[in-house]
Image (tube, rainbow, N blue to C red):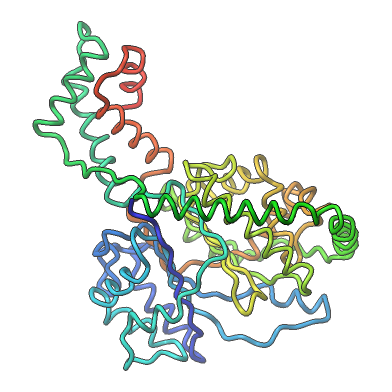
Length: 427
């Protein structure tokens, strides 16, 4: 099976480089924040394995919140991040980027402090590739090729059904006729690959290893839990809540790059609460999230939320800051409402370890349930994405799942009349 990989090339900008870089990145777009797939700098359409990609400048807009705690982090330069999700390995994609978009990427990364044009570009990017603490894929193994072929199949089925659907034909008969037509002159469908034996063994070993770690930790929980919960509640009652309304200018900049497609991008960046207690809590929580996203949430839903295509959590600045990026369907308000209504506890588990988060109780209660404060918090930490690319515009995660079902139904040897009716209804 072709596995999905992630990349996130992060490098500090040279002093005074921001205006020139933002102006250059704007030339990659066909509209604010939306990449022209065939632009002359980084022609994203030339990379058939690329699902999503973006350029975003990582600036902690809320770093002033640290002053409320009487602390400060060392001054860090503005960071440029080039990130995305692909089929196959990150290494292969970096080589492909260098071969097909080398001059353009050199021009972009030339704004970074440590860029060395004498080094092979792929080597330079791989050296600055930051691995996520957690990576989520809506449906591991579903490639860009599969998505595009199945979308073409759906369009073909919709046209063919108009010709084949007759009052005197049963649903089974229509199904058989469409199977015949597909074999004769339907769109091509590349055979799907399952997990190879080695990959299956590796997944089972990872799952067993993760389960063993949990089992070994269980006897210690009765001893540790009382002290942890006491320390947690003391911190929760003392933590500052910082949730002012975002400025109109910030909201306007974010709004200009949203809702140009059925899918949107989200980038957020902020500081982790100081101290080992919060950091170690966050590391443990993200480890558990990583296990569940790898082994449990692999069939179209993250918990009960089905609108996310890809997501990641990434530690930066020696784990002092956390980046979260996702590609999701619908508007940001609907996206946030979906999480608040279905898995608010999950939001609290992770994001309550960030400075200024709405007050929680025992990590999971409160927090995001304070809807307005939570939305202000999220918007304040959200970044404007300069360039965003999606390989299959107009298609939601629901569309991808439906198209995959249509393919399976069409390739089935036989369907009952009831199953054939349900299958036809999805076309």
